[in-house]
Length: 188
Image (tube, rainbow, N blue to C red):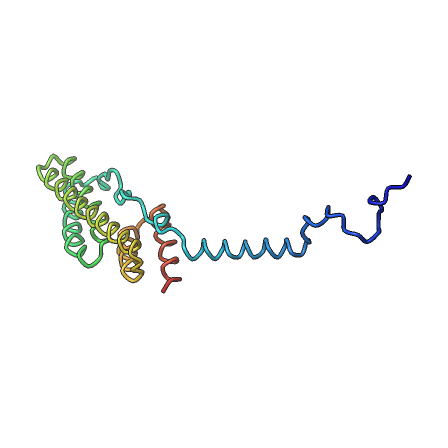
């Protein structure tokens, strides 16, 4: 009563093993898929993940008078703020510094009981608004350059944003800009 179809080692293929892949072929297939995936993802990383925050924190919340001689310190801060404000056209970081100095002058003038405090606050707010608007416009230009694939223009906008954030090198927006600059430099 032996069954003919159930002989082991007879050299005949019963069809049960034909669905199994050879381990070497599986490893080769997995390696190829991993390489293709890496190439696809590294070459086509979505630019939107690299765009910095829309409203960064460029300025300190409140600056106080750093001297007991309020009038003297206010006058020094105001003078420095005026000079930095004028230079902000050439160096955006001077504008950021000028806002802080105007705030300090306002605080010192207020402690001294001077009417100039309101004027200093107004100048700080005006310059802050201009710099934030510059940031937003530059960020928008960056988004458009990335969307159109204009890497040269995107690099220019990144550099301008980095200049605005130079005083905060560890902020999330500054780190995002560094990653974007690196990504853009690879595409040149």
